[in-house]
Image (cartoon, rainbow, N blue to C red; front, side, top):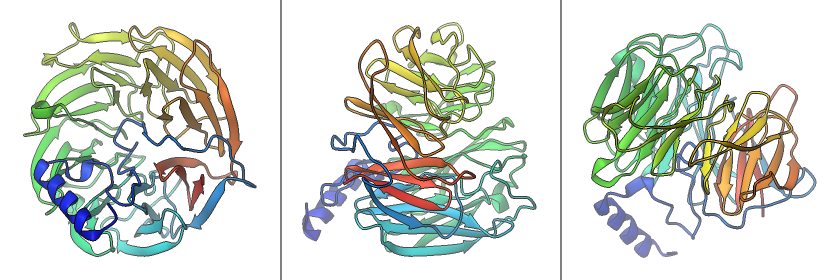
Length: 419
């Protein structure tokens, strides 16, 4: 797939089949990481990721960013995209494109924010929503309400100002929900103190496909797109409720209410169940897919007795669900019944969600340390402990996986780890 002709035919075939931008990359055999948590499940098929690295050996490149941000990078082919904000009131919005192999910045776009804020702190979202990449380009959303599409050369395709259309975002900590990619569509959840909604837009034109009105719910979670054929769904875990929406028309299919403190961690699924994280005990739970209406009495599979989930989202891999609490304690639960298998204290807490790669699971701590565990066993088996340099007032916020390497996001810098 190295010629332009073959690549064009493949893209055309994908567009007609409806796979479009939610599918893997087509260029040079490099698999892509197109959105938040990759395809939304934090699992990669890349089998040659590094096991060991340090600041002295294993860091491929470091690239300074124009602004500060808390979003994760995304990749498409050999291009890495990342967003950030700048200025005393986050008035400058940046999208930067880097080369995956060399770390060279290929282009940068600067936009002016539709809305400015009076106060900026690292506990109020700054460039927090992760973009989405695909064959036609990259799509980015900022907490100012600006939703913008660019092609892979950095040319703007369309833009919208959601706060001008639907009202300003209300709440003390900003907006953190990331864009979600679905075939030919983009999904965006705006849950805040004001009128909340789930928005579905057309990737090519940016026009609204449907908009589902929601009760006011303050949270920073990202929806999960579930490809279930004709029954494709959008699953939302947000401040008191877990809900499933029909991708076709935005109608709510099922729901579970009276959940506590599920405001940050995003839902995960293995195709049979959905698992959510909460910072409150007995609120990390699993529900069976396939229900309709209120599923409280019919589809709850289990509740974890002691596991809690703070910033990072739960990971489901090979029959085990992994949760990380605020202090950095990793708790492994059996997916079939929710019973705890073991727990392990990581070097620090995690903002980034863990990622599974075959026989290994990677955990990236805020302070730059990373632990690699074996994906099997009744007890935690540490394969390696690694570290990169992170300033005391900064942290690892997220990462992308592509080309046998990790691209880590620190506030003002990208760090590529791997060959």
